[in-house]
Image (tube, rainbow, N blue to C red; front, side, top):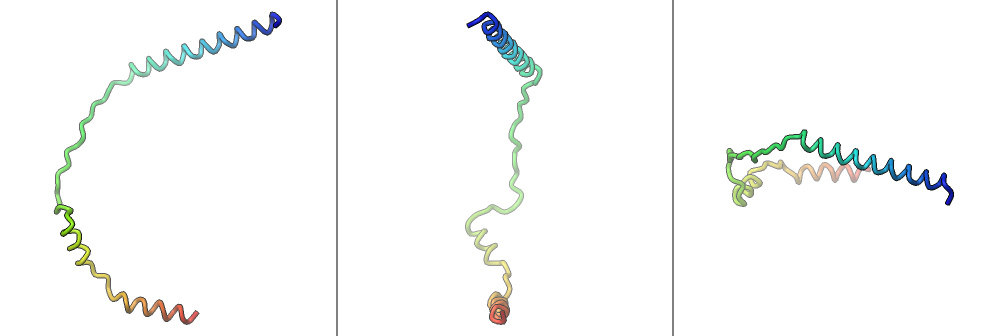
Length: 82
């Protein structure tokens, strides 16, 4: 290796070390600048009825879906006309 190659390699290494040191210092600085925030989980109050299987089934049974057979007949007739 000639002298110019060795100087170039050393220069690249010096620049790389300088960048790493700079990043390390900025990371430490940013960690000190940001205060630690401690938050507690909010307490959730139950406002509605409990979601039990029986209450969910009761809600499903109380849904009014209309006359599905009549609606399907209309769709079937439209499909048959195609």
